[in-house]
Length: 227
Image (cartoon, rainbow, N blue to C red; front, side, top):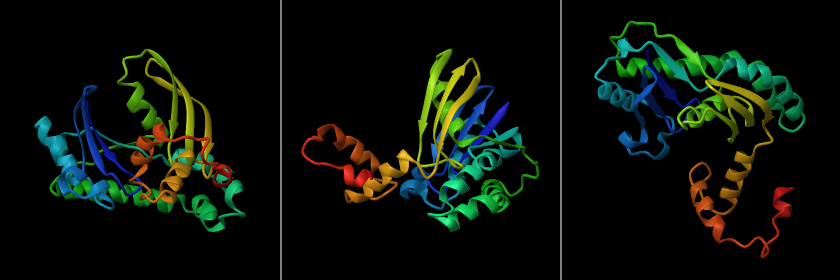
């Protein structure tokens, strides 16, 4: 089975990966071809073409598209998000609750536009497998680890709504234990602190990570920032 993975649903770091019969054949990020860091707002067209070329196949040979975003996951958590944000960020709360179909249309358009740009002559309707964002993160680690079972922790700025997920894996099954939803996001906090320190949010986090071991927590009290 030939599975083409496309990313990303949030407008940055566009990429593609190709698996054939359970083996990764190729994977690439769009920024490597366009030379624009994070490929903000760009479709992963060159990344897809690279993967197909490495495998020696065409787009019409693909059996399934895997995409790291799930309407089902969004709808499952949207009420909790509404209750947590309706008084602090009402516009965003109602958008997440009532405009799910609009968001779905946007994700479908991203996929369609990418595939059309890759090969406008391909008339095959390729099925889409909507993979929950944090499950995709967890699977990309666990499934290639060689482990038969594992505890899993994913921490992100946010997926559909989930920001942190605790799960367990055994065999080829991943079972969620607990989810922490936005706006309680350690990823968002890390990005905010990156911005506070003078680096660019969504880009400079690795610099903060690299500097962290050299810091001395006793020299400065960050409690007020956490609050």
